Image (cartoon, rainbow, N blue to C red):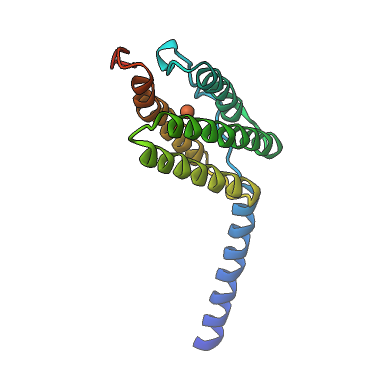
Length: 167
Ligand SMILES: [Fe+2]
Ligand SMILES: [Fe+2]
């Protein structure tokens, strides 16, 4: 066999291996969360507005459903539920902030928009079989951080006597 034939054969073998690997990767492209992460609602997360607090508590339950989802269908349904609830909730918070003349309104709204963008991206990756559980963990971390910091700031605006420690 001359050099050119040997090279063509080697290239062919590599192409077959690459095709097999990509088929293998496609069949494992959805890796699901292990279900061992759980978020725990605490009374100290309350911001002092009955509607907001009730909605935050409901979102924790939805977040846990999302974390426990085991297949693409339930991931899609839970992500949609979470997304719809958050969107409505953010609109309510933004309305309240406008009514109160809350000074940090624009930054708070920007943080809501970023969260919606992140959840949109996560939903798209679920739909396109590019699901990465890390994206859910990122959303959960940023969203709970938002409640602890941005929403708590709003809580202190509603009630200035509220203690600063929300842990
Ligand atoms: Fe909130
Ligand atoms: Fe908020």
